[in-house]
Image (cartoon, rainbow, N blue to C red; front, side, top):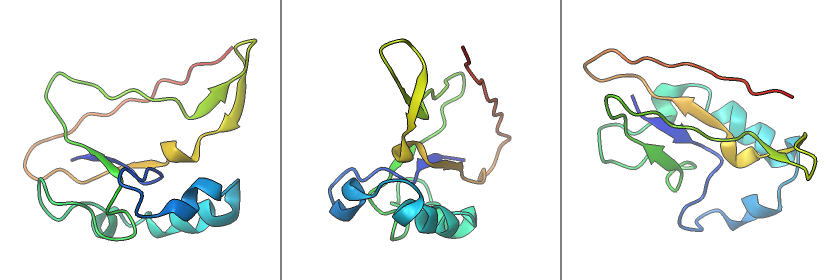
Length: 107
């Protein structure tokens, strides 16, 4: 069960995404990635289908965790602009169980 960051573009296949701001563009991409069975890699090591073929895919490793920020932080440590590159999803497991936890950091 990989974690895929749909908002990333590792090889520059989708340069127009760098100019998207807010819901315009990203909202459509987010709606397309909702059925994870059609947006996740078909098998281990295979890239996900377009339009996510250049997305960051993190393979699970027992005992490891993935951590990222969803927002930029201003000089005073307050949450500011949402980072659309953090748009992500959990792919289905192929053989074993998967554990997930969310940690929301606030003020």
